[in-house]
Length: 431
Image 1 (tube, helix red, strand yellow):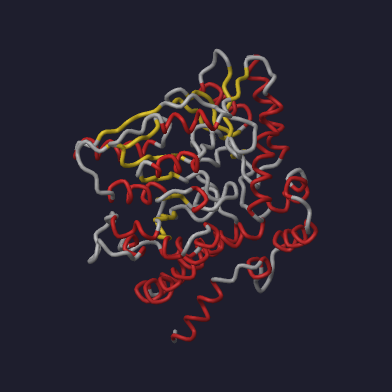
Image 2 (image 1 turned 30 degrees about the vertical axis):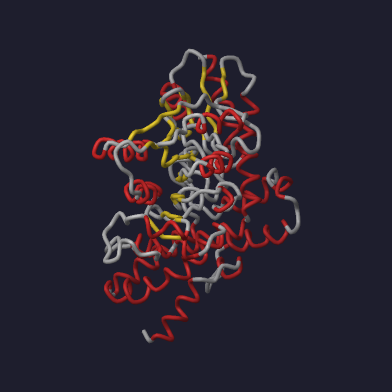
């Protein structure tokens, strides 16, 4: 393949219009129907479109959902739409025709266009975006890359994700840094309370605050910017775990006011499993050591964080199709649909005797993820009932002061699915 042909090939990978995204020699019926639905959606407001089951039915047809179950655990990992699956398989087949050639000389050259597209939807410079395999890898790059010494303090929450907690504990064990814990009373609709829990823990020795943008256990959205501004006033660096916020609802990374941000793209962007993103503010890059060694660890080049060795290029390049699908639906439409679905089932069960909601219905405090508990019952009992009686896949949560079942619909979820969930919860409370 000549250099000119390689450029043409990569240009083809980068086309993100709806027509290009869904085009092929023979377009399947689902893609033609979705294209028509998008045209008919026109200028309708996202909030109005959120309740249009006909429109979202055509979105559902873009996914290969199983007829054997109702998946309401999209908070763990999201399935990719068919267009992303097909791209990954195509790039995998290409790689295996001559791995060292097609992986290193062709697919690897697609990283720079991909970096630009990720930066576009993140609202950052491409020179602040590194492509990783998941949020844990991205965040641990910063956690282990920051220069801290014995006695330096890090403020974090007991509701943070276990991988991140364990990473910080390892630094505490090995280097003697001090972890300052806060314990959030959730759910909350009081941003002053939420931010205050962090800011009250700041001392002159605090060097870093670790903030989970969306608490994965119950979907609580934290006021990151409020905390970040207070931290920066005291010279404290801000690391944000955005595993569950990126592409779930509309925002830009700079709007959070953070210094570092990590996310998994296989969650709400619906890219292939094993893809993630790291953001490091441009002026902060030289001070962070990469997790995997490079010749110039003090370089200011964001690419120093991508020295991962051989990796699945076919997964990485399929991210481009996930971005295209996200663009096609539209961030505002997606956010409003996810919020509508969560509030649809929660509103229907909130007055059922023994039911307790552990997620806010208010915009700004929650979006797609919801949590429910039933008085006198363990989370595992409700999770088991939903699965054995209705084949509804959820996850029971027992973590710190959060005990319930996490329910997470996605854009392919229908209200018909949620009607069955509502029925099932009602039956369970009477058992």
